[in-house]
Every structure is written in C-alpha cells, then in structure tokens.
Length: 231
Image 1 (spheres, rainbow, N blue to C red):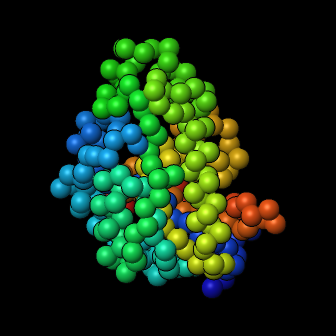
Image 2 (cartoon, helix red, strand yellow):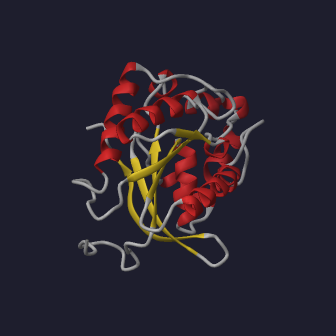
Image 3 (tube, rainbow, N blue to C red):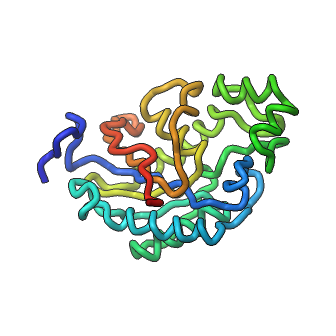
C-alpha cells in the first residue's frame, strides 16, 4: 500500500512496528493512586476488562480498517504484573497470539509512594516529588526514576524490535511511565520531558523502527501516541 497522506517520509513497508498498549483500569487507577512495578497487583476492575476488550479489538483492526498501511499484529509481549497480563490475555484471544512476559516492561517502582495519590505524595515528600516529576533522573524514595525505567525498558524494546521481521508488527502491553519512557527515548527527548505524554488506559502508541548497523532501533515514525480505544 502507498504511504498515506501525513505519514513520515521515512515510513516504508520494511519497517518494524511496535504497538504499545497500556493496561485497563484497576481500583488504584480509579483512585488516582500510584501503582508500581514493585507489587504484582491489583487486577483489572470490571470496567478495566471492558477496556481491555476494546483495546484488543483495536489491535486486531491494525492493518485492516485502522491504519490499513500497517502490518497486522503479531508477537505479544507484556509486563508480568497482573493488570498487564490480564490486558494482554484479551489481546491474545483476539489476535491468536500467546503472551510472553518480560520483566523489563514493568511499571516504575514507586517505593515509599506505592498506593498513594499524587496529593498525598506531594504533602509528605514535596521536594522529592517535585524533583522526581520534573528532572527525569531523580528517584522515588526506595524506587526508580524515569531514566531508570527508560534504561531497562529500552533493553526490552531493543530485543522486541530485533525479533520483529521487517514489515511485521509486535505488541507490548505495559504501563504509563514505561510507555512514556519508550516513546520519549525513541524520539531522543530528554527524560525530563517524558512525563508530558498522555497515556490513557488501554490506549495505543504505535512506533515504527528501522534497525541500525549497531542493532539499535532507529525511529522512523510515530504513527500515534496515546490513541484512545475506550470510546
């Protein structure tokens, strides 16, 4: 298919496509509380399961009526946390793919902030929270920074891209900070800016890569960032 209007000049049929899917909502999501990679739960709520089904349908439609120039979804990788595995299972049922867990795509470890709302964190750790939120390199107490997440998640993405054939697509089900880090690092943006990307529950972020001689993914196109499927 010819490159559609508005596509990147670098977009071509030989690119390797990665579809990043955020998980559906949990009780902590709905409470606006921080839910990190240091604990396995919580699971999706009933609403989260509906969102996961809608996201799965959107992934299934890739290469058909949704961005028809893209390849159909193939290999399926997920963060090993309960909410991402449940969301990935919905995608796998729709696309016929088995889920491969990968620890490198887990959410940021929030340490002492686990389960707390931003307001509670700002009250208890005003300086630390301000630094974590803006620098990209300051760590949560007992946890990680945006840059830490970007380092480990990028290693996972490198392997996914290398395993994806030219002209094919892989799916990674992950989390807000993880997806922000992968999109931001793909664009070469500083870690301090990654927080600016909105990633709604069960949204799609589609990145397309070439592969450099050094094996590093080279971003050729951001097809979409934070595309909502819960509509």
